[in-house]
Image (tube, rainbow, N blue to C red; front, side, top):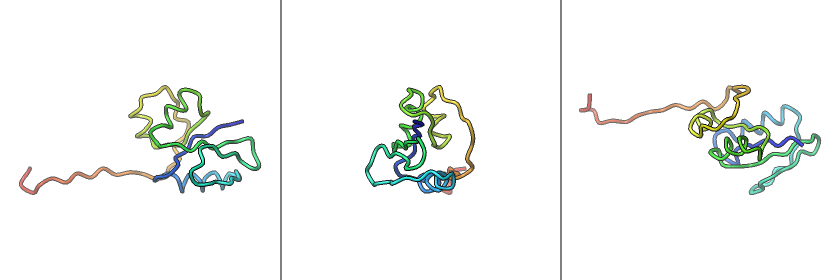
Length: 101
């Protein structure tokens, strides 16, 4: 059984669910469920907070995870980035007073 850690909510949730659906993975996702088995593949989804995903992959709780690169870099766990999926980019904006140069 392949266990995939994904965000339980947040920016990546919708795009992750769409990606898995396009891959043919059929789920009966129920809100507030931690572990959801696929109906047609030997796959389970482990729904976690985004900052817990790198830890779960590093410790072997999940086999792979889908999470933002920022979380991987911040957690500094020994995990391998297999592929960048190209969705849900983020932007950093700073607001400062006009008189500060």
